[in-house]
Image (cartoon, rainbow, N blue to C red; front, side):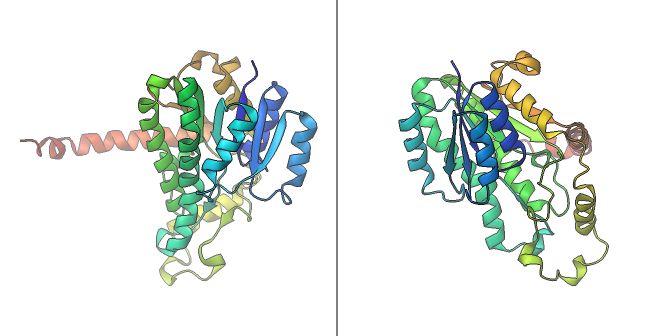
Length: 295
């Protein structure tokens, strides 16, 4: 039986390509966008791919509305087999430069919104003793860079919650998958998505000129449109992991009791390898200190 998939953020990038690929595989897709007018081209395209596509206007930061939206969707379509928390953006800049309001918006979009959707869909999945939750995190959820502090914080939070959920939901046969993309040739690094704190106001003098945060931002701007990752292939791999087909067949059923982490892109593999090596060095350096604190 074809699954019903709820995907947030289908206006562009991985969300759009995953929705398209899932539709071509026979799935029913409920795809959300924040602004239907701005996303009209993407929505028209998905509707042309299959009549099984259903658009939904949803701002994932509207936390109070999410429970009623999910209840309406399950009432209308019967159930949701797969929830894909994909919508997101990144504010770029030194942590000190990012206001508390900007920090809250980042966390609402990339953490509290997904959390609200998870909490809203779980009663339905528990009742059916079946379901898959896919949290699109990032390599930044395991390896934070300068200028990415708040984005990394939101993704670290989603990674940690995914780990706990996998254990908590194992008795109910619910899979938890954390997708960790590297740099893909999408619009994510465009000027519209690389939002600077304060709407582009002048930074504190110490952060102007050559510094780690500026270096990261300049590098990201320079690689925009040249990222190594192919988003179409990433969408196909995501579907295969969800469906247990193709390259995802060996992973079929995994994600129950232990979060299934899916690295996408060679750069993701490289950065996470470095992050693991750094943690291993820390274990060696602090072994004696850690053990000295026991009774």
